[in-house]
Image (cartoon, rainbow, N blue to C red; front, side):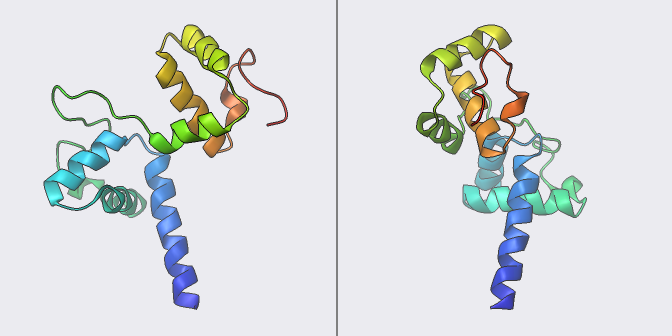
Length: 133
C-alpha cells in the first residue's frame, strides 16, 4: 500500500509540474504524436523531465513549452472549461474578463476555470472575481 501512495504522490508531482509550466495541451499532444504515447503519459513525461531538470531530452520542437502543430487551431483545456461551467461564474463574467484582457470569451472561460482549479481566483481582476468562492 505504501508503494501505491508513493506512486500517487509521484504522479501528482509530475502533473503539477506540467500544469504549472509553460507547456500547453498542444505540447503534450505533439509529444504524444511524436513518441506514440497517449496525452496523459505525455503530460506525465513533461512533468517528470521538468522535475528532474532534463527538459533538454524532450524533442526540440517543444522544449520550453508553447509548441503547437503548424496551421492547427489552439486546443482548449476541457477540464478548465468544465470547471468554469460548474462554477458560480457566468458568461457575463467571462465577457468582462475577455474585454479587460482583450482575449476571446472562450479563452476567458478557460482562464477562469484554470484559476479556480488551482486556487488562484485572487489573480482574477476585481471586476470579475466572485468574493467567497
